[in-house]
Image 1 (tube, rainbow, N blue to C red):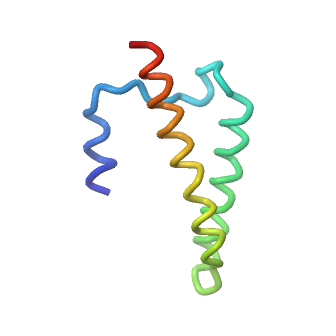
Image 2: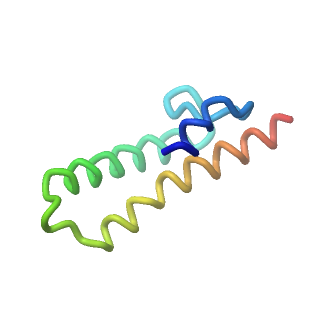
Image 3: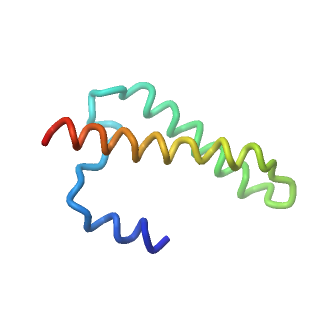
Length: 75
């Protein structure tokens, strides 16, 4: 959590899904699927599948990777 908190102060242009035209439909769709997976996991903490948790981590990796790629492309 500390790493993510410090990320606010890093001078990188993070992806804003509804304003960035690059891969907007994919990013918004994956974000919605990720949000649903997280909400389902929170609602069913006792029976959460490890596979679902691991797969749900793919969206944050995608988000950071795309943000970094767009940042590098703009500099």
